[in-house]
Amino acid sequence: MGKCVEEFIVGEVSVSPGRTVTETDVVQYSWISGDTNPMHTDAEYSARSPLGQRIAHGTLGMSICTGLSARMGQFDGTSIAALGVDEWEFLEPVFIGDTVYLRTTVLSSRVSSSKPDRGVVARQMELLNQNGKLTQRGVMKTMVYSKAGLAAAELGKRIP
Image (cartoon, rainbow, N blue to C red; front, top):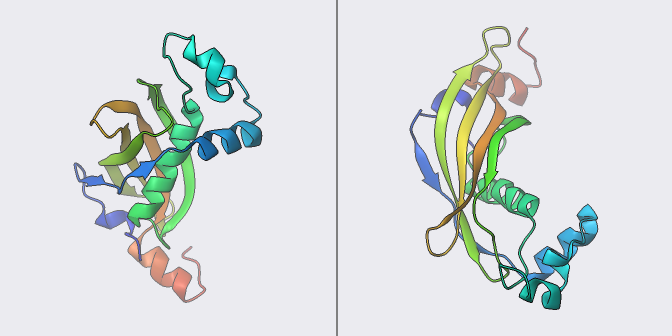
């Protein structure tokens, strides 16, 4: 079971397991998203670019962040909804074959005054590669059950 909003500690840092970005990831994401830019899909074109090779989509990196966050288990059974992404930056390319991991830092965690069954956790998300280089970062906010809200939800009730 994941954590309730009261259990997140401001300043707490967590690190996910690693995940290698594959050619299959990039090809499938190109077709799912409709973004077939040659920097992602054409090895010859991208070889002539300043980066010298194909790169993963920036938004694929963001998606990998959410997946790595899920693997950390902090919100298993306690999250209600994603609320937003702020200040996201694409700092370095993610290449096919890079192994990336997610480092999160809790920025804030508070129970809602108007809806005490839930609260909001804001975390700094940092996607790093196998060399420890920061490739992406931003803030993600998640609506999470409070302890009272989770207990009520498990009983099939709502807190007014």
